[in-house]
Image (tube, rainbow, N blue to C red; front, side, top):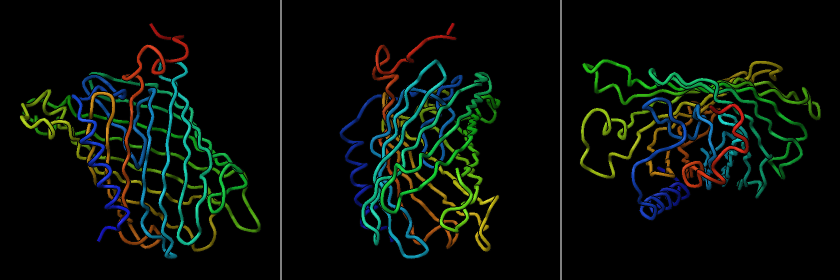
Length: 304
């Protein structure tokens, strides 16, 4: 049974959707006819001015019985067309353990490819989780560095005989989290390979390219399932080389300048947690809301 926290998150998410009833989406991660929505377990392959506020997460219960609830935000500012710098942070409530502030996280990301005809998009980034910026249980004395690759592929280039499959899309991410020091207080800090993918079926795409969906609410939904995993690959303590992660079925509702996503968090094994958690996020596309001010790149250098 879902926790009380999850039910509260779900009710709040439904309330926000009702309050922000707007027209169909024109989000920033666009390649050809494909819009890749912002996803929660892994990042989408686009780069744009955007704000995720809030992201509310009720984590699955830890293998040691710990419960965690996170309330975070993420802001991305484009520096040049296709090049953005993001800042992420927020608070965590642990039971037992109390309240703590997470480490500041930054990522420089560049969208280096869009093959419009094939709806294929790719971006590369470099993420830093800054040591000594978190508090309490979230504190880390060292930085963690992560090169990241994000890709997305829509299937709109399939023939008309396969129309039912054309709204499908997949995205994927792979990164390597490298700790700034190998040992802390006699304990090993492993390097981990973080990887995952999403499966999406875009009803807005179906409505625009395949057939009319009369229901105004349904035609803005993108059912999605995310798979997010982490595998220690170097400097691993004995007995700790096990892949952990979550499977995250959910749905995304797309507005014209925002989106709302809600997903369950299902642990893949006992090391990943117990029971089911949940995550909900309200995401604003500033490049659509403020295209001539806050939503445009600082410099247009390199733009035709």
